[in-house]
Length: 434
Image (cartoon, rainbow, N blue to C red; front, top):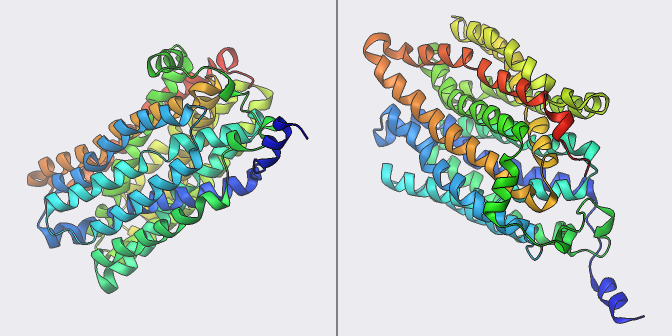
């Protein structure tokens, strides 16, 4: 056995792609659980710390999103380098955001809680781009949308668990206990994650995956990667659509819960369980369906990868409006189910296209830029602007101010529907085969 054979033999074998997807899904569930649990806890936090709706919007949005979005790009740049171990990167980030979530539970005022939320954002910045890059390197291109959609199930599952755990634990033990409880599992998983999965770049049989020897090519600078990414008009349209989708999703995610508590008189447990049905289960179904349909119909015509997000969001808008208008909370919850399913269907198709519109050396950067837009525009602005509008409308609408804001948000869903349709028209010409 020569030296090269010995070196190859010393390397560990690649992680089974299905196992990698399941472990990354678990990480992403914790990512969104820790990020979004503040939604169900917003009302008790507001009462305990004496906050305004604008301050709540700041905690749920910019305090987290600015650092998350800005740090995501340099971390993604590192993840795209051949020497980077993306599994270790995700593990370190997981430990940071989990610890900071637990620290949120001991905050005594707005400033302390805002700083802790910044810490959560700093940790979570390294997860999504590195995970998308790992997935793209580990599955064939024709299965990329459904694989990324499977990973994306962490959004509705994490949100569902956050609503249930946050609501129940808050009613029994308070919001501080809820935050400390959900932070602990991530710290434990971070310790064992490198033992469970491996980066394909560092494995003996990595040639069987779609790395296309990204390690063998010269890494792109950030400027080169960004230039390549935005040279694609399809990517630009997806970027706009995904960013605006996140703006509406994060805004509605926080304030729809407050809407059920204020306008319908539900407790945090009742609101959490109700929204777990509407946002959690239907979000899971929509995310999975979006990825599956993109792979199935995309084989026939690449334009159809984004057909469901475009048509679905257009259909969802009027149904969502009626749901916010309904006076019976049970009717309102029922009417939110279909729009939530349709609005969730974009994740796999959108991020699958992102990975297919650039070379492997720019995949993490491409994903991080969309994450940047979704978080700086979506999470950073959505909850905050919704909160500001609610405060401005309170002299006129009183406790119904949130409902009025949600009326407008329902119809704004037509904007991302338009841009997903525009992007779909360019996929046949711009999608790469690798």
